[in-house]
Image (cartoon, rainbow, N blue to C red; front, side):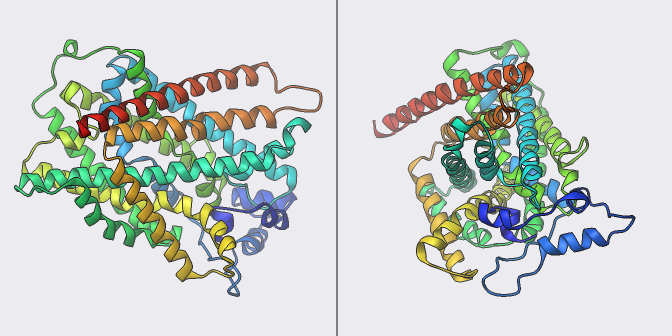
Length: 476
């Protein structure tokens, strides 16, 4: 599938790619029409054709079920997983697991809502593939009540901005995570290096991994990253459990409002993979396998949720109020502990290009237009990628407090993408002429919106306040 249909499809391009009737269904389900597979082949060739000249975008081969679940897994397993101990510290031993389950269920539901709305807009317009997140929002407003249609382009651009800020925020956090863990490894061997200098050393491998321009080529990178993260988590939990856990009564069962706000920011950060949903679905050879009952989304996110719950509960039970912004920071100085930190840091480093890929696919076409570049321009794209990696490094150098940075990005951007826009577009897409969306849909989405906006404002405020206090302590 070409890059535009894989990650960022402009409205004009999407209008020119139409497919209706049985052939459209065949492409979605992967079945043939009229008893054979010929229609599927013709349809797929019309969408996934190889570029014939320099003005066409790079070809992206379709991905399988396994390849897609690897990408989804890696897109959700990162610093947020190892920050769940810190999240549970801010939520309490009883409240945090309950809220984690609620956030997981609502987040996955909102991802399904996004897919449903995108498919509805595709069917309404007769397009070949589902629109991405931003265009789905734009199309829902464009085809919604008359009073909202004038906001369509603004809302689409707003989603793109949130996605770019979120994904680049993740990349900044990846720099902080890697440098914080590598600094501890060096300290174990009596090498005292400033964390800012460690970030500079991490720049070269991060940059090299970010110059991979094809999603298909990222699959082995994501696979290695997944292995590193899962092994790292397993050994971390072994360290936490090998000497037993303290008694439950030694830990707080619940916490205060400000701490719950920090918990919300960290937890929603961990579950925010919604920006990857439509790109990964559209990149699949059989897109219908993504959102089915035992599809990529449900299976992948269930496994991710179980890992988050386990990591958070064990991490907080073991280290209590001393739990770090990453569980790896509590492992000590043994050789195996250093190996785990290096392994997890490698996994995070290799996860950087996947998060980076989403932002690039949104920003690069606009950058090309601004610079008057036509065609693919590999040199231009690689230069643009390099500039953005430098930008994320610079921001990470300014805010090296890992736990607070995670909570801020989660509350500020992840909440809007994961919990605000999906209910809004479902309310719009479910509305008919002179008729509302219905009592159940309206009530459900209003509850999600109220909780999301509460978390958005309180989480952002508390995170910013803590960051200001952190800098005050540093300068004091």
